[in-house]
Image (tube, rainbow, N blue to C red; front, side, top):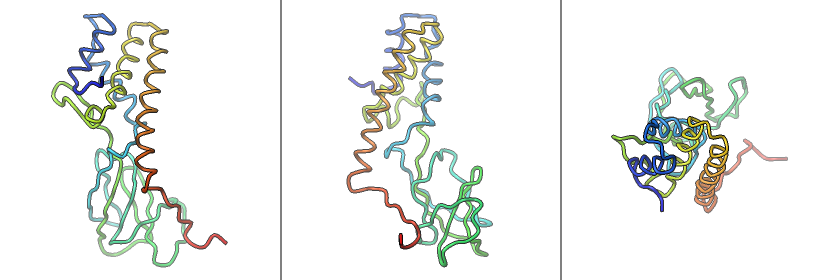
Length: 196
């Protein structure tokens, strides 16, 4: 049975470690922070429309990775910050810090539709659920919290077992992502022209 709320995970972690003095809320927070950078799932996809200023747009605060960038109705092509030559009529972009920069430059502002993977919002006593708990992936948070708990308890064997369980939970989530994005939603690679 998957846990559906923060309180259920909090109780379950307490039941597993049987240490009433343990800072379980901290384990859950730290566990989420440990796994958040590595989670990439179609449930995270978010779309925003931005307007460029000086050939760049500031990235949303929850930005993790770009999925698609459309500039003035044209699909933009990711490029290197060092590239100087571009296909005629193409719009290219690269990430620089917390912004996307568009090249070649334009004297006018541009409308930018950004589809991106948003960082998973953390659950806590106030925010009881997120898309992980709502879609059957609460095991990721649960096992990440137990890894932190057993590390705190200096129980290396249990910590190692929970790391294995965490990897299995993440693998299940990745398999779901691959199933959804690989069936009718495949990635297309455009090399910018004919291959030969």
